[in-house]
Amino acid sequence: MGATDKWANGKFAGIAIGLALTLIHLISIPITNTSVNPARSLSQAVFAGGLAMSQLWLFWAAPILGGVTGGLIYKFLLQRDSTEVVAD
Image (cartoon, rainbow, N blue to C red; front, side):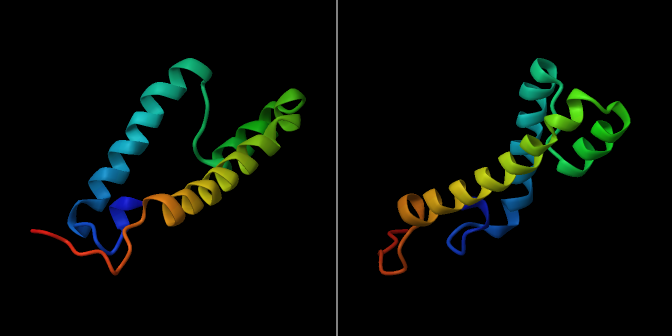
């Protein structure tokens, strides 16, 4: 969230977000074969059925809860206040 903050250099936001997503893929897919896209998780669970369908809720709930939690943490703990003076 800091990459898209009004105080950040917006020209590099895409690079920061892309590298973060690459890191998530490099770490989690080899370990758990996970998906970071809930729509992809839905399609695979529909085809696999059974146990995959019973676990599908997690692939929707975790990104939503993680996004809300990350947003709140950034807003209340990490975001720079507009009254702070920036020394260049």
